[in-house]
Structures are given as C-alpha cells and as structure tokens.
Amino acid sequence: VSDRAVQDEVIRALADAPYRASNEWRSRGLAERERLERFARFLARHFYYERVVHFFKYSRALARVTGRRPEAALRPPGFDALFPTMVLGSRATAVAIAQLVTEYVRDGATEQVPYLDDLLRYEKAMMVVEAGPRTWRDSVNGDKGVVRGAWDLPVTVEGTVLLDLAYDLPAVLPKLLQPWTEVPEAPARSARLLVARSAHGRVAVARSSGAVEQVLELADGRRTIEDLAAQTGMAPGQLEDTLRGLVEVGAVRFSTGS
Amino acid sequence: MARPTVGAFYNPHLGKALAEATGIDHLAMADPPRADDPWWPRIKERYTLLLHDYLGQLSEPLDERSIQRARSLAALYETPWVAEHFQCLHTEDGRYNINYVFPPLYTEEFLERFVRNASALKARLDQPLVMENIPGFFDVNASQMPEPAWLRRFFEATETGFLLDLPHVWLEAHYRRMKPESWLAEFPLERVVEIHVAGVEEDEDLRGPWISPAEPSDEMLGFAAHAVTRCPGVKAVTFDAFSPGLTADVLCRSVDRIRAAL
Image: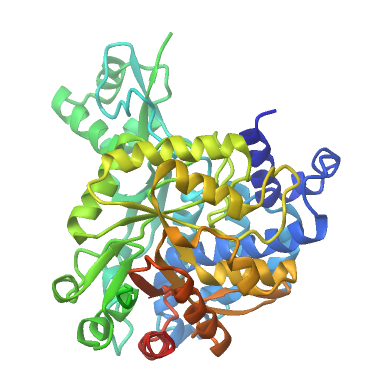
C-alpha cells in the first residue's frame, strides 16, 4: 500500500462516518480514535457551515424578518443526530443538512416573505446539486467540452435539477443582497430553472425552456445528436446552441460510445 | 535585518474599511475580489498584495488550468511571492474531500511528491514560491519523521520560501504539551519569508483551542515577537483572519497590536 493510499484512508475516515465506525478502519490503528472523532466532528460542522452560509445566503439576508439565520440549524440536537451517518460531500448528507436548515428557517415564515417556500427549495436545490465527487485535476488530454465527434453521445449529468417555482426568484435574488428597508418583492409569476454543476463543482442556474427540457429528457448517452435533432425537431443550429449552453452549465456531458 | 511589513487579509465585506485604513502595509489575498467590489481599485492601488489562494494540493502535480490561474492571479496582484500550503485534503480519486487544510503524512514518499510538484510549480511561476505549514490535531501512525525534519528537507530540496504560520506551531505545541518556543526551534526558521499571526479560541467540537478569526492574545503576540527574532529573512507579518464575521475593528486593532509587539 502506498503512502498516498494510506493518506486517502485517513481522509476517508475523517469524511465518512460509517467507514470511521467500521472494523475495517479501526483495525488499521492509524490514529487515536477519540482524537480523530473530535476532529471529524469539527470538520463536519465546518464543511456544512461554509455551504449553508453560501447556499442559503438569501435566507440569511432575510433573517432580520424571519428571525432565523440558516447556519444556526447546525447545532444540537439536529446536527448531532445526523453526525453518525454523515459522509462529507455526499448527496445524501447534503439533502439531510439542507432539509434541517429548511425546516429551521421555515419556522420563521412571515407574510412579509410570501416566496420563502420557493426560496428555500431553490437554496436546497443549489446545495444538493453541488454535492458529489468532483474532478480536482484536468486529465492530461484536457476537458473535451463541446468538442466532439460522431461517436460522442450527449448525456444528462446525474443530479441536474429542473425547479418549478411559483415566484420569479431570479428577479428578486440580487435585491436581497443589497441594502433594503422593505422586504424586496418577487413577481408572482411561475418560473422554471435549471440547476446544474460542472465537473469541477461550480453550480450554475439558468432559466429553462422547452428546448432545454426536451434535450435533457432525451440525452441518455445512447442517442446521437442526429437522433436528438430528429426527435426534437430542432434545427441543427438551435440544437448546437442548446447543447453548448447545457455543457457550459454542466447539465450535459459527452460520453464516448463504444 | 529590515523590519518586516505588517498586514492583514483582504476581506471582501470590509472593502471600505481596508480602502480607508491606515497602518496596514500589505494584504494577503485568499480569494479574488468580486468583479463588482467598488473598493477593489483603491485597494489594489494602495497595497502590496500577496497571493495566498488555494491553487491545488501538491501531493499531485497541478494541472495546466490551475497553473494558469496561479499565474493570472499573481499578475493581477503583482505579488512579490506566491503561497501554497503543505496540505492533502482530498482523495486521489476525488471521492472524499474534507474541505479544510490537512497535512500530508510525513514520509519519504510524500516528501518526494511535494518536492517534485512544488519544483514544477515554481518553474512555471515568475515569482518565488513560499509554502505554509499546516497543523495536525492528531498523529497518524504512518508518518516516518517529525514535521520539522520533513519541512527542512523539503526546503533544502526545492529552495522555496517558508510561510511560517505561528498559531499552527502554537497549537501543535499545545497538543503535544510542549513549550511553543521549544517546538518552534525545531523548524527551518532561516527559510521564513512571511509569518502568520492569529487568534485561537476554544472549539466545542475539538474540546480545545483552534485557529479563530479573533484578535491574537498577548501570549501569541509575545510568541510572534520571539519568532521574528529567530527568522532573519522574514519580510512580512500578516494577521491571518478572513471570515464574514470578522469586523474592521478587530482587523485594524490586531494589526496595530502586532506592529507594537514586534
């Protein structure tokens, strides 16, 4: 076993609570158990504190009317109850933490923020989409991006979300982060947003459209671009533009068929 | 020995205070400024800026994108040196990530990896590379040598500079039940270019002290003054705090107190 592999075991033990509790890890005897546990708890709180402050920043800006700062949810008993099952960075843990925060902030619901439910769903979606393994280093050959050949097949990236909202949140979000005295209003008109993540972990949001939704539904890694063109009825230029946009936000990647 | 400059970290939410502050010589940059930060042009104009971003973990080679990002930030800031950390915080396959500075095993294999990858990065930069020590909260029973010995061999092999994070040394000494001055003496202080000073506070999860965006205590300031006398090449001392909760008062007062202590 290389030293790099041993380091990976230690990192996994710090990040993955079920692994940390396993005989497989304990039998390795690599670190004092109690010290490692304390440090893992510290890391977990730090990991999700950073994410909650970032992804729930709009709810945070509303705390003076809701009385609920999202990061305050990361306290006992809720956070501590999740700790024994946490795997830092996993989608399941992101869902659990985001749910904890959402329930906490929702308890501060007020008529002044009629769009609070939508906002919490939006923020939760951002946090959950960000979770999952990521590419830390580009491969030697570089990212393929939208460069492709006839053998490349578009596929919708796992975790990509379409979010239906009753309020047009993109119209109000920037205002929430500016100084305000009256709570900024969100237009009561429906909006559908695409939330996706690049391989490097950057979360992007874009307004969705019929074309986007068709492509996301059909891009299964088996259909060719010609198949998509035939089934959506899109002109080649429109399909190319749609795919390029989806690749840029991380919603679609190209797999190489056999 | 010339007196080191005394500075702090750029905190985006304190843009106005930093643009108008007096008594701060330099700013370390942990994150790039937002494009819409109205205070950035004034900050860039008046301060020496030190690149201190996350460029990548040098247990693996940096990819071209990361190198170009480092070069671009270094050019933007006109930084006198580029800082990175002795850290290995995500698994090689990208599956697990602890999102917090964490030291590598102090082994021959990791020494060879860090020497190779830091040398490669250094060769691609137009400025000197400095590397920051990272504290361990617990020992891993696979390390082959003490951290100071590993660092000394790294610096000898790469001829890079040492960014000495003093609270990190203080914390390690605390958890080893050693006097901070005794533990500090083990490190290759002749390589130090910059020193970080910060506060430490009790952490409930660790059940002990840890780094905090707080004012340094009198004890830490005394330790900093001692360290500066042992580091003949130190050029800058930086109050190491960046956090949305940090106030301008704490930042400015900490810089003043560090300056007074040296």
